Length: 129
Image 1 (cartoon, rainbow, N blue to C red):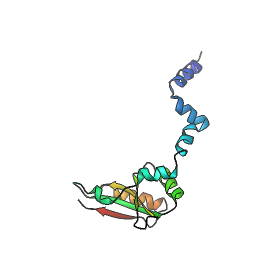
Image 2 (cartoon, rainbow, N blue to C red):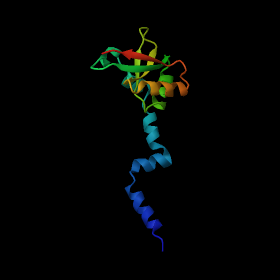
Image 3 (cartoon, rainbow, N blue to C red):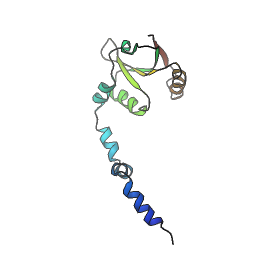
Image 4 (cartoon, rainbow, N blue to C red):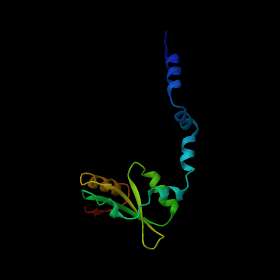
């Protein structure tokens, strides 16, 4: 006799409710998408790269310069596994979209990944200590 049904019921009891809801109803996705583009942008905005001048040289990869908040927000969501930061330009309307800070061992690989993602003009910004 198989205990598969019993085991399955036991496993389901231990799965967090939010995972079940997300899987079947996308409820967690709805909560994340309820955050406005402005809130996402504000949470990723930095005033300058100077704040990253510490004990070692760090690198940023500039992948885009954009003004449209929806596009910027979508970009941040799409590449959320990377440290995306936004640096406002002097005109106050556009933002440099940067990935970083990265160390010397990381930036080459990350640059190649973003070029493969379609950011053919992506380039390195070096911030010296």
